[in-house]
Image 1: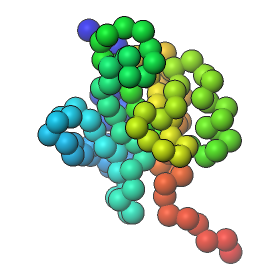
Image 2: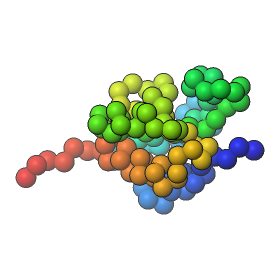
Image 3: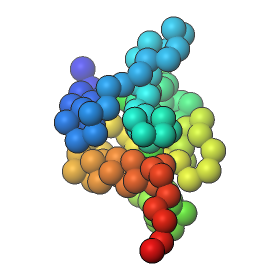
Length: 125
């Protein structure tokens, strides 16, 4: 079986944010939505997508993580190996391959950034 960071990520968000994945679609039982508790906004979704739909070679499916990032980081990361335009997401979402192409610590950093990006706006004092 191909390497996937899916379980590592689910354990990480449970420990760091107390997030339990939500499986919202009967048609896609492995799609795991990661949502903030305070405002209910998504900060990530793990999906298993056919490589061809991502513009990659091969017929098998691959686990990806979609996360939101700010515009500057979005422009920078889109050209990186293992990072694609957000699959099925608008705005500044990226898809990260969970096959070991992107180091797990970098993925954790992207998760933290996404969690903060979709969080409540802080008032300037």
